[in-house]
Length: 112
Image (cartoon, rainbow, N blue to C red; front, side):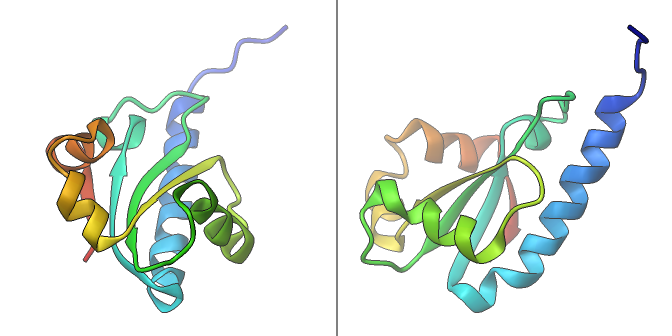
C-alpha cells in the first residue's frame, strides 16, 4: 500500500473551501454568529479532520434537531458538525458549557 504524504495539507484546503462556501450561504438562512472550533481552529488538521462549527441561530427546534436544518439546506461536501445554540442559550450557558468555552477561548469567530 503506497504512503500518501501531504494529505493533511490537502484536507486543510478542502476544509477552508467548504468553510468559505458555508459562510457565504448561511447568513441568509438565519445564522447570527459562527465560530470554528476543533482541529481547524487549533491548526492541527489531519486527514480525518472535520469542519466543527458553533452557530448562533434563533430557532424553536429542540437542540438535538437543529443541525438537521443546516445539513439539509447546505448539504456539506465534507464532514461537518453543526453545534447550534440560540442567543439566549449562548448567553445563559456560555461560561459553563465546555463547547461554548472552547469557542470563546480557542475558536475563531468567522461570522458575526
